[in-house]
Length: 401
Image (cartoon, rainbow, N blue to C red; front, side, top):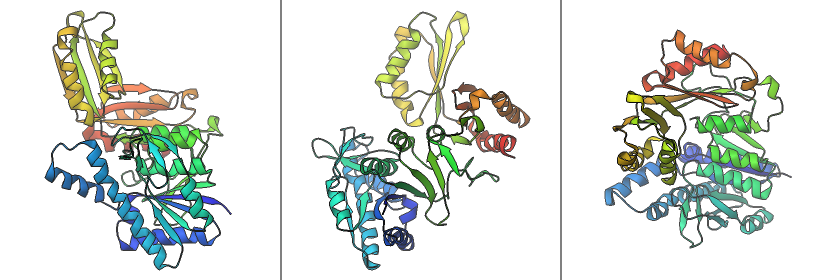
């Protein structure tokens, strides 16, 4: 007998038929003699609907109250699935984040898991029940409800699999695995049988939306046996695991991220410590910086450009404006009409010509590059957003056709 954790996203439980489809998947695994834990997200557009309702009442609610509101989406989906499984004649119980003892810090709307007590889950499993858990939510030390932010249900599922030492953690989505690029937009995207944790972390961080990077990092840390597959096709998915054939792997996937903005500080004084002042200020605002470019500007001064998430632009600009008198730059420029394209693959650094091939594909498509950054397993470029899909297709054709 195995312990299986199955996670289903909002599209998988969007309506009655899909809820019963999930119920059939879970009960099939249970009927085969396995212990089954199901982790759910809120149904379909529930979270967006709740955000709209909040906006009708208060344009600036506290994050605590937003967590109270948004956590109800998962409670609806777990109770409805439990009712469906009951209707099929199977023993089941639904549990919220606080009922399974998922403790977090107090960073509302982006909480981090601190501990997980599994006593209640183990009791229910020992009574041979299918256990349904609300993803995305937990409680802090004050017993306030918290939410885990983007990808929170993935993170909940992997945390449970790690804590309970599950034999398998299955992440069910609307695609049947990990592809070399988004199969909904790239005509010749190829499904991967397996991918390494590091490659998947990079793809997720760079914009691929099948898994969230927090959940993959957790899976890597605790060596969770992870599979990504479709809740609709019932076909084998993609296994995410430790890399065991580095020399054979070149390019594994291409990711696109349009949630990116370029901040440019123009005409910054060329004196020691300027970069430290700029980026320590940004770090103190809890804003993550990705690509950085420093170039010679006017009058011997410097221009400093860097990329951040669009959601952080307002806070970043406000903070940087306060530094103007100290650093002496003339203006803060913002460009949100950009996209980041990333080429990912373990072993790329040991194989010459990967970067040249990427740049050749873009050159042949008359696509200009604004910024470049690289690491051992990725090359990222910044381009005009209008060219993003065309760039991904050109790079994909070059490496995978």
